[in-house]
Image 1 (cartoon, rainbow, N blue to C red):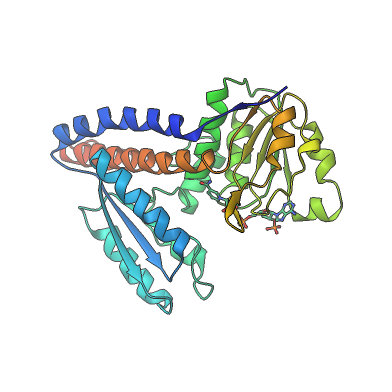
Image 2: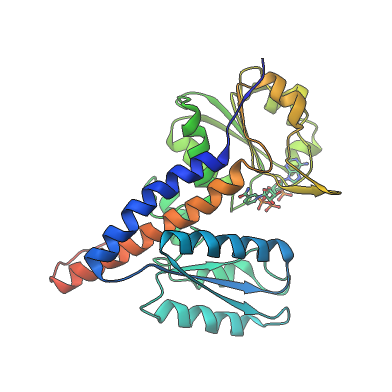
Length: 299
Ligand code: NAP
């Protein structure tokens, strides 16, 4: 067997096609435009690549994209001031704080400072909590990308053995909750699983395998269950090559569907950021209209 490769680019293209229809309609109805603002602290070439690509894609869709670059030594108060300014600027409809941050800055303090209605990365505790209770407002872009890729395979997730490797707040945890919401039987593996030497045992059971570790080819191809769906989130630079967290060639021999690295989760994640930006914009303008027409809502 050789896995069908699930290409992220074509899935992202279909998301953009939907947004290209939706954005002009929303702009026409509201007389406003979605404005996405990126806050980047420090110096990280990978983040600069992401910002350039976000800017290019946003503009092609009709979303205005701006970014603020703060120096490596920016202190927390300075970043908080900038976030507060964006929170209160009525023109700005979406805010993304580029991660990772320099080590002297506390991620939780800064992420919590973003107005949850403008948090298009889905990292604010209110938005994270909405996923937990099954009433998602805005989800983590990478986790949404994983789900979109899984949906593209046509697999029925109900009752399936799903194994997630990695329990980060950005990827592993939200993916686990979203899979649970689809009634998959979810196992979450992490560093302690690996330390006990139990990773292979769990991976061998997985009908759905999602790996988000950040360690090149840490999942051996021979561990992959025949017929599994494998979503490899990892991006690792090894010399001049970019590889995933799963050993690609032998895993591809066994899996039914597999995402490539690069070209799998990455492009879909950017498309989910754009989708979240439009979702936040739509929610803000409809709230504005409710206020205008005197509609009271308790949330
Ligand atoms: P992270 O915050 O560093 O989390 C990595 C997770 O893997 C942690 O839960 C860690 O556990 C666990 N882990 C580390 N070594 C392990 C091992 N040997 N076996 C099992 N688990 C292990 O990273 P992240 O933000 O989730 O990102 C993971 C990878 O995905 C990175 O390569 C990143 O670049 C990539 N990524 C890609 C996209 C995309 O759009 N394609 C988006 C986001 C991230 P402990 O915390 O307990 O050590």
